[in-house]
Length: 405
Ligand SMILES: C[S@@+](CC[C@H](N)C(=O)[O-])C[C@H]1O[C@@H](n2cnc3c(N)ncnc32)[C@H](O)[C@@H]1O
Ligand code: SF4
Image 1 (tube, rainbow, N blue to C red):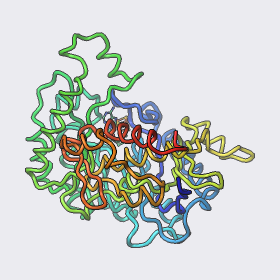
Image 2: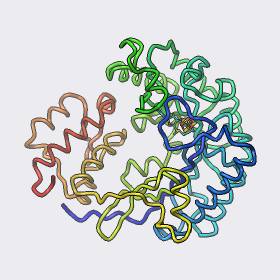
Image 3: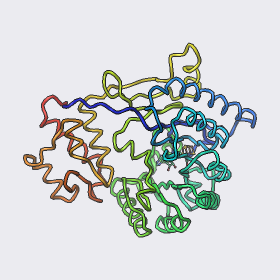
């Protein structure tokens, strides 16, 4: 394999580890703050901001010099920070020369804590990703969301009217609940959203939802993979009918300009720096490309940043050639634009054995993949099983390329 070296990171992820309260299904790293007094919450958020500035200052050298391609405030619920704190982070990045007019600046937000979209725009946010999940109040209650459908629609209307780029997240494939996803999609489209992300419900171990579904009869429990695929196809058909284009397994945009460039960076296997509790990074080191992750708990993360703390990184993994090939295949086959075979060859030294592999020909002939010049693309059917396809291709490569595996 040729030596793959990541260019310096032009993408920054900021993890904000607070939520009003935890939704029943969610295993993302965040702590509920509903029990704190108003003063207690302000103190916690200020402590977080102090830690964030310390981490950014210490790790600034891990970013490329010059303007970043994207900054993404994710969570948790970044909107709990309020516009002034987010603006102070953006002001710092701006003072370091890391922002310009082309930098995509996204923030995840919950409808009930969005506040006025105009205040976020003034603070420097350019793209809002709102967790809608459903426009059906019964479904929202089942999911344990802290807002109703009317609040979600008002937040979306305000964000669109303010001129921000707006995404709405939906969760589909819920067990045993009547739901009209096409009607919800139609309503979202009519509100003028430029982007919609559709996730299949994950029943994550340790969540209240997992406990609730445990031991239920099959018809009331989590959906099987076929039913999940059916739910994805139903959502995809509804989105396409409303003029959205699928550009990744879960992501749809009205126009290419509305695609989330930050997430595209992940799928293009680009370097990024992640700061905040539980944030992951993918960076070049002298030993090779390394994926690392920060302490997940708020206090351990904060203490690691105070002198003489050891720094926020809790663990890291040097990626092997085989890891990188599998990742490249998995990420590429999630995207409608597919995988560049030229980049696979020039960066990772891998040429897929089209001529000699009956299994590979079978995937092409079976309508799961298409070969389009120098790109290997998943068909719509292939996208539904992108990870399995990537694993099959990776196994073929490992068997065919000496030194891998
Ligand atoms: C981590 S949340 C952060 C955004 C914000 N706090 C919210 O809930 O809207 C980002 C998105 O992940 C999705 N998500 C979280 N847990 C999920 C699960 N168990 N299954 C499917 N989607 C999930 C939801 O669609 C959510 O909007
Ligand atoms: S889905 Fe969003 S609001 Fe709900 S617990 Fe997870 S991060 Fe928090």
